[in-house]
Image (cartoon, rainbow, N blue to C red; front, side, top):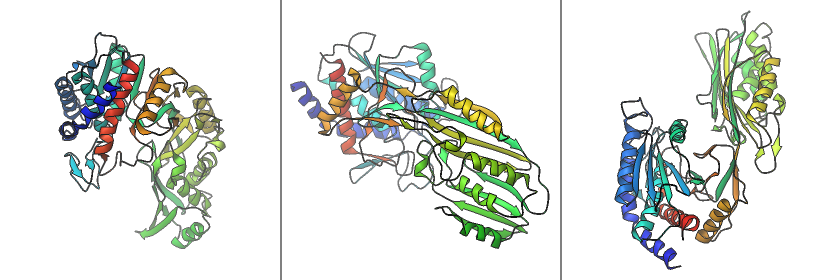
Length: 467
């Protein structure tokens, strides 16, 4: 008990040092850029790795850099860690809309603002200081623990793939790169592209259509250009459209530009968005007098497969559900149509009752039956760690002890840094009900939760590796 109390007291006095450590990481724009010698992901991620290694060494951890992509920071005797903690020091680019400098830590009203503060530099600092506290207090461990600091999570985790080809992962592994209490199930993912060719004739045509910039996002906007069709005809069709999608159009140089506005969302939760692309397709298919427009005919086929408002893949023969991981979700996320060529992308997240090959086969069949060519795919199988495993139950017990709240397991449609690693779960760093502007402007972590995470991680290490 004294060990646990001393950990909390020690970390409480380290909050200033934790702020300084976080500031030194935030000031590095560590998004991926062009590779250089010794820096496979560019200067930023490489500099962040070096800084992470310096922080770890200063806290008394044994450090090693592996293949210039991952830093190991070990605590405890021996070279075979029982527990791994996996964080990443790369970030997404800053984007727009910030009210504070994105690469300078700003402290305001109990919040610490800056790119990476919640994803994942803040949790990495909490992990470093959690292990640093155990070292400083000379709390003995029955088995060593290894903190892993990566540098390419945001662009596909090639750092982790390379590391795993060289080094063995600990038998127990968690990442503070998700949500509390524990994410133990992550759906499988299939991202597939498809295409079609079409011919057009007549004076009334859809000249082009485009929507979506990211395969993993529900498009909030979609636009098209029409010729031979009046604004009045479009407005009449739009009035019959029963949806939250709003349409606007303007005439320019004898052509009609049509814009659909919906609500964007992550592709893992398409039901939280309002897909402007599928809405625009439905409107375009309702316009009269386009019998000679091959694009409208092929959009009608696409609308039958992925009708507006449907997010479970039912019309494509993909609908399925599993009690723990939930239902399959589908988002038509990208589409480009111009000069006789259509190219699109669909993003699917599928539950434990399906496989990547099974979903791929069903989607391919559905698309080819409607005349589309099935192109490149990428994906992963579902990931699951049993909720009744001793590892998960221990972490849930630590969470309940530290928060006074009941612990429970979560299934998500997205993927965390441990997806596909046997035994890996996400444990933090966001507490229930938090909104930290992750990947957005003015990203932040509160000072209170930075400290709470450090205490949580220290107690988790003690529970799993302590004597």
